[in-house]
View 1 (tube, helix red, strand yellow):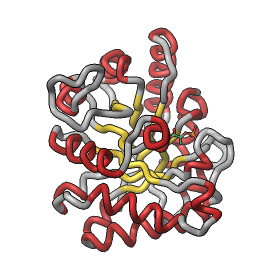
View 2 (cartoon, protein in one colour):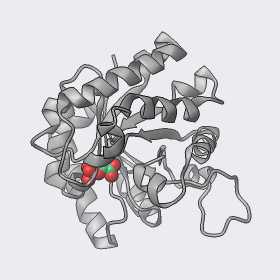
View 3 (cartoon, helix red, strand yellow):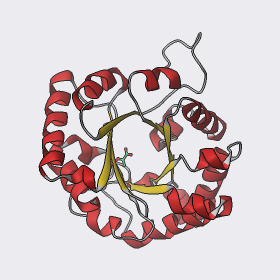
Length: 253
Ligand code: PEP
Protein backbone atom coordinates (compact mmCIF):
# COMPACT_ATOMS: atom_id res chain seq x y z
CA UNK A 1 0.00 0.00 0.00
CA UNK A 2 2.89 2.35 0.81
CA UNK A 3 5.44 2.86 -1.92
CA UNK A 4 9.02 2.36 -0.78
CA UNK A 5 11.24 5.42 -0.50
CA UNK A 6 15.03 5.59 -0.44
CA UNK A 7 16.52 8.95 0.52
CA UNK A 8 20.22 9.77 0.30
CA UNK A 9 21.50 12.25 2.87
CA UNK A 10 24.82 13.49 1.52
CA UNK A 11 25.46 15.49 4.71
CA UNK A 12 28.30 18.04 4.32
CA UNK A 13 30.03 16.22 1.46
CA UNK A 14 30.56 16.84 -2.22
CA UNK A 15 32.09 19.15 -4.79
CA UNK A 16 30.71 20.20 -8.17
CA UNK A 17 32.59 17.57 -10.20
CA UNK A 18 32.01 14.81 -7.66
CA UNK A 19 28.27 15.59 -7.47
CA UNK A 20 28.01 15.47 -11.25
CA UNK A 21 29.59 12.06 -11.39
CA UNK A 22 27.51 10.68 -8.53
CA UNK A 23 24.20 11.93 -9.90
CA UNK A 24 24.97 10.85 -13.46
CA UNK A 25 25.87 7.33 -12.32
CA UNK A 26 22.84 7.05 -10.03
CA UNK A 27 20.51 8.28 -12.76
CA UNK A 28 21.93 5.80 -15.26
CA UNK A 29 21.57 2.92 -12.80
CA UNK A 30 18.01 3.85 -11.83
CA UNK A 31 17.03 4.01 -15.49
CA UNK A 32 18.81 0.80 -16.48
CA UNK A 33 17.04 -1.17 -13.76
CA UNK A 34 13.75 0.80 -14.09
CA UNK A 35 13.94 1.22 -10.30
CA UNK A 36 11.81 4.34 -10.01
CA UNK A 37 8.85 2.36 -11.34
CA UNK A 38 8.87 0.58 -7.98
CA UNK A 39 10.57 2.89 -5.48
CA UNK A 40 10.70 6.64 -4.87
CA UNK A 41 14.25 7.94 -4.72
CA UNK A 42 15.43 11.28 -3.33
CA UNK A 43 18.79 12.88 -2.72
CA UNK A 44 19.56 15.59 -0.17
CA UNK A 45 22.73 17.44 -1.21
CA UNK A 46 24.24 20.34 0.74
CA UNK A 47 22.07 23.39 0.04
CA UNK A 48 24.70 25.16 -2.05
CA UNK A 49 24.56 22.29 -4.56
CA UNK A 50 20.77 21.90 -4.72
CA UNK A 51 20.45 23.89 -7.95
CA UNK A 52 23.26 21.88 -9.56
CA UNK A 53 21.65 18.57 -8.65
CA UNK A 54 18.13 19.77 -9.46
CA UNK A 55 19.23 20.75 -12.98
CA UNK A 56 20.78 17.32 -13.49
CA UNK A 57 17.70 15.37 -12.36
CA UNK A 58 14.95 17.66 -13.71
CA UNK A 59 13.88 15.31 -16.52
CA UNK A 60 14.04 12.23 -14.30
CA UNK A 61 12.08 10.62 -11.43
CA UNK A 62 14.88 11.33 -8.96
CA UNK A 63 13.80 14.10 -6.56
CA UNK A 64 15.87 16.60 -4.63
CA UNK A 65 15.47 17.77 -1.06
CA UNK A 66 17.28 19.95 1.45
CA UNK A 67 19.00 18.88 4.66
CA UNK A 68 17.64 21.77 6.73
CA UNK A 69 15.52 24.91 6.56
CA UNK A 70 14.81 27.98 8.64
CA UNK A 71 11.58 27.93 10.64
CA UNK A 72 10.92 31.59 9.75
CA UNK A 73 9.75 33.14 6.49
CA UNK A 74 11.97 35.38 4.34
CA UNK A 75 13.59 38.26 6.16
CA UNK A 76 16.46 39.28 8.40
CA UNK A 77 17.87 35.83 9.21
CA UNK A 78 21.45 35.98 7.97
CA UNK A 79 22.80 32.70 6.70
CA UNK A 80 19.45 30.89 6.69
CA UNK A 81 17.25 29.46 3.92
CA UNK A 82 13.45 29.67 3.97
CA UNK A 83 11.02 26.95 2.98
CA UNK A 84 9.85 29.19 0.13
CA UNK A 85 13.41 29.42 -1.24
CA UNK A 86 13.86 25.65 -1.14
CA UNK A 87 10.58 25.12 -2.99
CA UNK A 88 11.55 27.85 -5.46
CA UNK A 89 14.73 26.00 -6.51
CA UNK A 90 12.90 22.70 -6.96
CA UNK A 91 13.14 20.91 -3.63
CA UNK A 92 10.24 18.62 -2.90
CA UNK A 93 11.26 17.58 0.62
CA UNK A 94 13.40 18.61 3.56
CA UNK A 95 15.06 16.71 6.41
CA UNK A 96 13.97 17.99 9.81
CA UNK A 97 15.28 17.04 13.24
CA UNK A 98 18.25 14.99 12.06
CA UNK A 99 20.16 13.92 15.16
CA UNK A 100 23.25 15.84 14.02
CA UNK A 101 21.19 19.03 13.97
CA UNK A 102 19.49 18.18 17.26
CA UNK A 103 22.86 17.51 18.92
CA UNK A 104 25.04 20.22 17.38
CA UNK A 105 22.84 23.02 16.05
CA UNK A 106 20.14 23.52 18.66
CA UNK A 107 17.23 21.92 16.81
CA UNK A 108 15.15 21.15 19.89
CA UNK A 109 11.54 20.00 19.93
CA UNK A 110 9.93 23.43 19.57
CA UNK A 111 12.14 24.41 16.66
CA UNK A 112 11.66 21.04 14.99
CA UNK A 113 7.88 21.53 15.20
CA UNK A 114 8.17 25.03 13.74
CA UNK A 115 10.33 23.73 10.90
CA UNK A 116 7.77 21.02 10.09
CA UNK A 117 5.07 23.69 9.93
CA UNK A 118 7.23 25.94 7.73
CA UNK A 119 8.00 23.09 5.33
CA UNK A 120 4.33 22.17 4.98
CA UNK A 121 3.36 25.77 4.34
CA UNK A 122 5.66 25.81 1.29
CA UNK A 123 4.46 22.44 -0.02
CA UNK A 124 7.63 20.59 1.01
CA UNK A 125 7.46 17.05 2.41
CA UNK A 126 8.96 17.10 5.90
CA UNK A 127 11.15 14.05 6.54
CA UNK A 128 10.98 14.06 10.32
CA UNK A 129 13.94 12.26 11.91
CA UNK A 130 13.51 10.62 15.31
CA UNK A 131 15.67 8.37 17.41
CA UNK A 132 17.17 7.60 20.76
CA UNK A 133 20.75 7.84 22.01
CA UNK A 134 22.63 4.79 23.25
CA UNK A 135 22.15 5.91 26.86
CA UNK A 136 18.40 6.21 26.30
CA UNK A 137 18.25 2.75 24.69
CA UNK A 138 20.25 1.21 27.51
CA UNK A 139 17.90 2.84 30.01
CA UNK A 140 14.91 1.29 28.25
CA UNK A 141 13.63 4.70 27.13
CA UNK A 142 13.59 4.19 23.35
CA UNK A 143 9.84 4.09 22.81
CA UNK A 144 9.21 6.95 25.23
CA UNK A 145 11.84 9.10 23.48
CA UNK A 146 10.49 8.60 19.98
CA UNK A 147 6.92 9.07 21.26
CA UNK A 148 7.88 12.43 22.74
CA UNK A 149 9.69 13.51 19.58
CA UNK A 150 6.76 12.48 17.37
CA UNK A 151 4.03 14.01 19.54
CA UNK A 152 5.74 17.36 19.92
CA UNK A 153 6.46 17.61 16.19
CA UNK A 154 2.84 16.96 15.16
CA UNK A 155 1.08 18.70 18.07
CA UNK A 156 -0.06 21.74 16.12
CA UNK A 157 -0.82 19.99 12.83
CA UNK A 158 -4.09 19.13 11.08
CA UNK A 159 -4.61 15.53 9.96
CA UNK A 160 -4.35 16.73 6.36
CA UNK A 161 -0.82 17.91 7.23
CA UNK A 162 0.29 14.85 9.22
CA UNK A 163 -0.45 12.57 6.26
CA UNK A 164 2.13 14.53 4.26
CA UNK A 165 4.99 13.62 6.60
CA UNK A 166 7.63 10.99 6.13
CA UNK A 167 9.16 9.68 9.37
CA UNK A 168 12.74 8.45 9.60
CA UNK A 169 13.64 6.35 12.63
CA UNK A 170 17.35 6.82 13.14
CA UNK A 171 18.85 5.47 16.36
CA UNK A 172 21.64 7.93 17.13
CA UNK A 173 24.02 5.09 18.05
CA UNK A 174 23.64 3.64 14.55
CA UNK A 175 24.30 6.81 12.53
CA UNK A 176 27.66 6.82 10.85
CA UNK A 177 28.96 4.20 13.28
CA UNK A 178 28.75 1.08 11.13
CA UNK A 179 26.55 -0.37 13.88
CA UNK A 180 23.07 -1.03 12.46
CA UNK A 181 19.95 -1.80 14.45
CA UNK A 182 18.94 -5.40 13.84
CA UNK A 183 15.84 -5.75 11.67
CA UNK A 184 13.95 -6.83 14.82
CA UNK A 185 15.13 -3.83 16.86
CA UNK A 186 14.17 -1.48 14.04
CA UNK A 187 10.81 -3.17 13.43
CA UNK A 188 9.90 -2.84 17.12
CA UNK A 189 10.28 0.94 16.95
CA UNK A 190 8.64 1.20 13.53
CA UNK A 191 5.63 -0.76 14.78
CA UNK A 192 5.42 1.63 17.72
CA UNK A 193 5.55 4.63 15.38
CA UNK A 194 2.78 3.01 13.34
CA UNK A 195 0.66 2.86 16.52
CA UNK A 196 1.37 6.54 17.21
CA UNK A 197 0.33 7.35 13.65
CA UNK A 198 -2.84 5.27 14.06
CA UNK A 199 -3.70 7.34 17.15
CA UNK A 200 -4.01 10.25 14.74
CA UNK A 201 -6.19 8.22 12.37
CA UNK A 202 -5.97 4.81 10.71
CA UNK A 203 -5.57 6.44 7.29
CA UNK A 204 -2.53 8.29 8.68
CA UNK A 205 -0.94 5.00 9.73
CA UNK A 206 -1.75 3.50 6.34
CA UNK A 207 -0.15 6.22 4.23
CA UNK A 208 2.74 7.74 6.20
CA UNK A 209 6.04 6.11 5.30
CA UNK A 210 8.48 5.29 8.07
CA UNK A 211 12.09 4.97 6.92
CA UNK A 212 14.94 3.37 8.83
CA UNK A 213 18.29 5.13 8.94
CA UNK A 214 21.58 4.22 10.59
CA UNK A 215 24.47 2.54 8.78
CA UNK A 216 22.25 1.02 6.09
CA UNK A 217 24.42 -0.51 3.38
CA UNK A 218 24.16 -2.76 0.35
CA UNK A 219 24.45 -5.87 2.54
CA UNK A 220 21.95 -5.15 5.30
CA UNK A 221 19.29 -3.17 3.41
CA UNK A 222 17.16 -6.08 2.19
CA UNK A 223 16.69 -7.61 5.66
CA UNK A 224 15.70 -4.23 7.11
CA UNK A 225 13.32 -3.40 4.27
CA UNK A 226 11.67 -6.83 4.57
CA UNK A 227 10.21 -5.78 7.92
CA UNK A 228 6.50 -5.04 7.83
CA UNK A 229 6.67 -1.43 9.03
CA UNK A 230 9.91 -0.35 7.36
CA UNK A 231 9.03 1.52 4.18
CA UNK A 232 12.53 2.29 2.97
CA UNK A 233 15.66 3.99 4.21
CA UNK A 234 17.40 7.26 4.95
CA UNK A 235 20.93 6.57 3.84
CA UNK A 236 23.97 8.61 4.86
CA UNK A 237 27.45 7.32 4.05
CA UNK A 238 26.34 4.73 1.52
CA UNK A 239 24.45 7.35 -0.52
CA UNK A 240 27.81 8.84 -1.56
CA UNK A 241 28.74 5.69 -3.46
CA UNK A 242 26.56 5.21 -6.53
CA UNK A 243 26.96 1.44 -6.60
CA UNK A 244 25.95 1.04 -2.95
CA UNK A 245 23.09 3.53 -3.19
CA UNK A 246 21.71 1.74 -6.26
CA UNK A 247 21.97 -1.62 -4.50
CA UNK A 248 19.98 -0.16 -1.60
CA UNK A 249 17.34 1.21 -4.01
CA UNK A 250 17.18 -2.24 -5.58
CA UNK A 251 16.68 -3.83 -2.16
CA UNK A 252 13.72 -1.52 -1.56
CA UNK A 253 12.09 -2.09 -4.95
C1 PEP B 1 22.03 9.74 8.20
O1 PEP B 1 22.85 10.63 8.12
O2 PEP B 1 20.83 10.03 8.23
C2 PEP B 1 22.49 8.36 8.28
C3 PEP B 1 21.62 7.41 8.48
O3 PEP B 1 23.83 8.13 8.13
P1 PEP B 1 24.59 6.72 7.93
O4 PEP B 1 23.78 5.95 6.92
O5 PEP B 1 25.93 7.08 7.45
O6 PEP B 1 24.57 6.03 9.24
